[in-house]
Length: 284
View 1 (cartoon, rainbow, N blue to C red):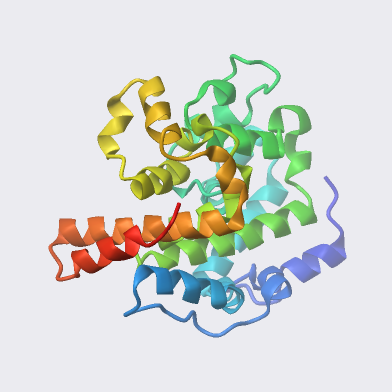
View 2 (cartoon, rainbow, N blue to C red; view 1 turned 45 degrees about the horizontal axis):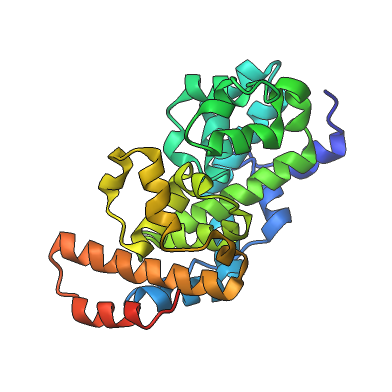
């Protein structure tokens, strides 16, 4: 693969401390520190996060650890000689999976390699048979089986992944202030893509948001798939997720229910009666 000198000059600054800063600064500029939502109820925290989204992602992109991760990812991608070598690199897996909402899968290198190099035209391939549909979605995005390194070894793809990594890191950081906020932000961004109950059940983030909002216990996962599907479809029409207004209300319901669950499990002094009243006032 040929990478132009001008691109490499833009990508890597002269400083060796944080070689990824030039790319991230080009994408975002240097922002101020991320504002927090401490002291707010979960719905207010969501509104605050969305209001400050742009500046907070810029601030996240400017953080040294994020710039270091992107620099290591970029170097690994550009130097890879094969898809197998690429996916075996921890720096690649860290950024690639985090950027695609799969940070919980970072340690499963063998699974990732097999899933992401699957022949998608074969219905029996691993990506097509895993219950976690995120693997198939990611495999479709890059289609390494057909495209090889060409799908990722280019400036546009690298810049897109870098931006998504900074965004995902920002979302994950929001959970330290308001538990569940990362899921809420991700669900709002992806809700319009939902076309089936199986898609929800196969995506851990979507499953968590939907089952929590609907009050479906986690133990439902041990029931037959048909029972799980019925538990969701009997309470919500999947087509409603095409409505931004409905999604907004649904996400708020999730945050309130999640806050009540968290408060109950930790024994904090949150007024659960108040939270219940709020949840009842949200129409879904």
